[in-house]
Length: 75
Image (tube, rainbow, N blue to C red; front, side, top):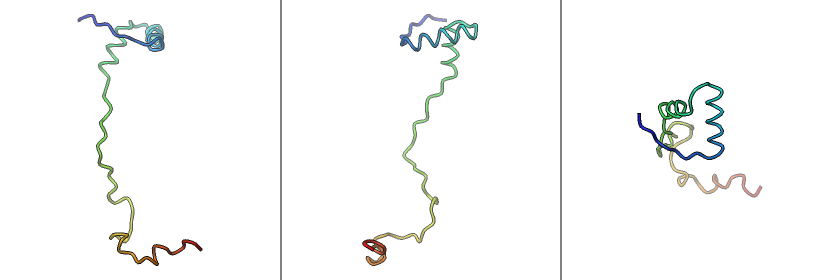
């Protein structure tokens, strides 16, 4: 095992001390366990998966007559 230094904010240092006191474990053991269990957040892709989420007539809105598009406006 090799010694490593880390910089912690006051709040992080206090939390680490509290966790060590409550669990009866060393701060080093808590840090090692946290590193071992760490899973990076998945980098979300750009696939929005909207296929099939709505029913409709299909086709383009550009194919609808202007009267149908304006129906209900200005009434």
